[in-house]
Image 1 (cartoon, helix red, strand yellow):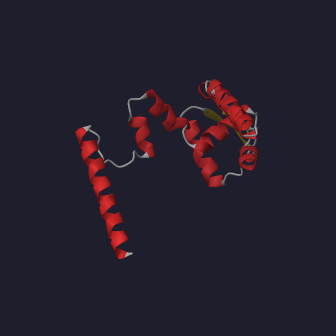
Image 2: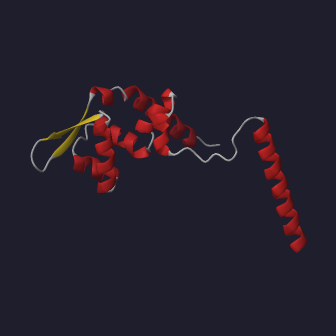
Image 3: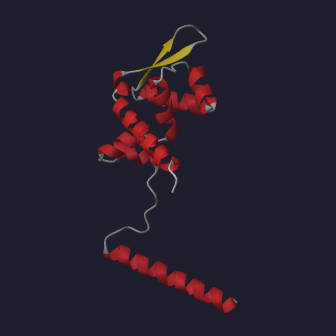
Length: 143
């Protein structure tokens, strides 16, 4: 049993060395750590810049709620079941980026309205909804 474990460990080491050699030959930095989320905005790629703004799941879902005319803080929070601190952080970021505009109807009612920049994402959200519908239909079909 001990011999089998030793052989398995040696095999793993050989595989790791072979992969590292291949990465080095092909110019791939095998020692590089995964890119941090905040570093996306600093990349030159347009996709990276867009993902840095809308890439986390809550931002997309908050935008979806705003497109569905849920504009009050409490409506968004209860419809998504999102914690208040997380929702507040996402809304603050979206306001800072110019996607939403805060509005106060009274001291107690906080609303967030889509700006032109936010409304420009409607084709993206519609495409995601259509893609999700197609996935749901696919899963519903018997195999």
